Length: 361
Image (tube, rainbow, N blue to C red; front, side):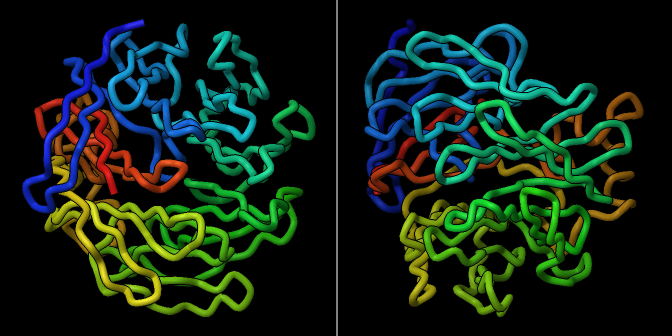
């Protein structure tokens, strides 16, 4: 158990109170923007930190409680922690999916796919099913099954898979992103019904799709121009806002969308879905690295080659710490709501090192 690292300040642009929750000289960042970082009672904040020498899960009492290490041993996928409805933490190590009891720190391996590497997991609204994207050699696809360890299966896909998510109202459906374009697909968790939801090319930079709360519709960014909505049943697309929203996370009702911004970084905003009007919440002051965010198309081969060249021949573009194609993820704010939606969690390297922040909404 470590002492609180809490401090607070008032945002210079909006006057909102911002809590800095971590201050250790190592990188600390919040959970991925598709997951909630707070426990249901709003009292404990889950985050990833490298202070123990590798990526591990920590929790901090909000606002001024102590910091406690939750996971240990082999490094976790740094953006994988998610809080399940039963209170357990779900996370990924390499090609295995785990849960951990925050009270006892007992870990349990749910499923393993030998030789694979997993992305961040997602779980169904009832907490019974989970899904991850996988890569094993040249194989890519989805790995999904029950969190009790049963019925795990692969759903192969011909391209890189990222950000799989269960439909909030129909848990037999999984939406996921293919990379490169076209981006949005869906498939039933038994592997049937695979289909592309929107045909587009590399010049339509669709990113960060997710579900618009309990509406069941999809919402996504066409970078850097607009936030758009897709009707799940008809696939009809409509514009919500003409705004350079980046990472987006809707509230549960689907009436507001929390987002960060980039090029220019104008801070965190709340977008009213009915009117499309954005309201600034606070500045992020994050470095928001990634050369591709200056462009309005997906990365193509020459972008990756340029990044490799800039990084040096001994580094891949993904390993480089500089201004790479999509950038080190810990330099991006990735805002998310607290369970009662009175707070927003985000990451910023405004002090030179990524730390975890909470702004009062």
